[in-house]
Amino acid sequence: MKKLRGLLKASHFGPTLIVTAISWFFAAHYWWEGPAYVIAFGVFTGQLVVGWSNDLYDYKDDLMHNRQNKPLVSELISQSYLKRWLTFMVPFSFVANLLGPLGFKGGLVYMFGIAMGVAYNFFFKFNVFSWLPYALAFAALPSCIAISKDVTPPVWMWLGGALLGSAAHFINVIKDMDQDRASGIGGAPQRIGKRNSIVVAGLLIALGLSTLVVFN
Image 1: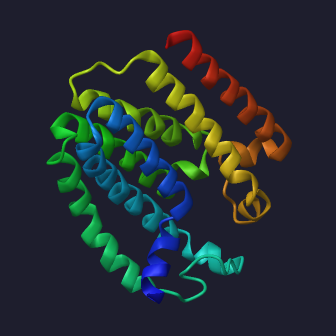
Image 2: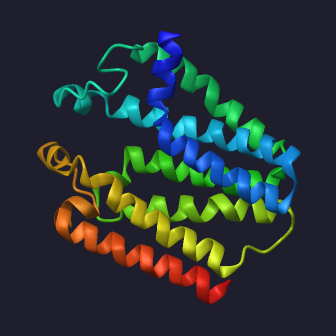
Image 3: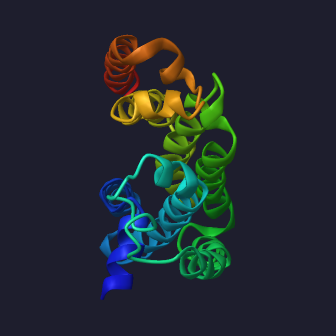
């Protein structure tokens, strides 16, 4: 039970659950409840890959700042244990998504979004384009479900997703911004500061919601 709790915490369970729920609602709209659960499960496995790789990569920084809410720092689980699960989950997630209801095209689009999440962990979080993986991943999530039904994703879906995803990035960074700066992490939010990040996030949310209204 302790290790299961550690795995769930390392997955960033709150955001993972939200993304999984969103995928279920879109899947239930384009499919029906049965396939929607299968699609949501596949999405969940992909979110595990993003969360676990993030905690593994950030371990030294989390340790330096004594982030006891992180399961590796609090020793709920070990690095080797999390690495073993990640090694299993990467190919499993590919199979679950490409061979599930999303199909090859929809599954590839979703896994592209997961690749963007991992790329953020290892590269983009340190530069001015830190928002880009969020934008692409949030655009890919609903779009992959539309594509699975041979529907061209409408503008409101991918553009609204990209804008709201970018806003989520600026909001998510605010709480750890001072520690990030001390660690030399220079993403877009860290470069413009907390106050400006709040302003940018607000503008992005307004644009995202406007896109849903104008293009829907």
